[in-house]
Length: 272
Image 1 (cartoon, rainbow, N blue to C red):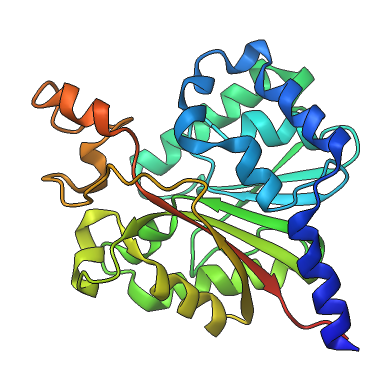
Image 2: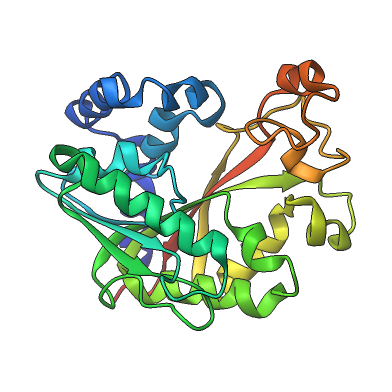
């Protein structure tokens, strides 16, 4: 019976309700995204959210949306009427000025446009200390975009990454999905290159997710970029949107575009 149920859930990867796609399309073309939509050609939000089978009546957590809330601009209005949206953000009492400032700017963004963001619930996430991103077993989807390297770097390593994935597993309903988009390090590069580059090995992320209780359902090259060699002087931040080298070789890196990225879909596989 479990295999039958699992097969049915897997089949949802091939289905995405037409009205849901139309709703997403409408949001992607909305005036509040005039600036952020310039990155759609790199981040493919319609294809990505369709791949993760995010529907407007679902309960969804976005992990670390940052100050600008690029995906929040899409998810919050998409889920506003019939779903539930959690933004698992930084700790307001963090010792990091960057974390505190990012959260403050995100909150100001929400307050400035209540017609879009008045139903957003902000929770605190900073593994391993703060991991309660939503009530246990309550959400349909957990989505994290370009964040795993942040938990791994600066000494975080396996412990912090595993704590993050376990938090996602705890929040999801049985059969719920975890969507991961992350900068991709070529498989022939050593693990040591993950420490400072911002790029992560795909097999490493799969291993950490599996240790937390997930099963990989499917991977996609929706957000792949073959032009990205991944060996830049300032790591992934050499590329847009950061362009850490400033004017040095700016046109070269603009031509490359944003990073090569893996897109992975996992299931909380503990159905009865």
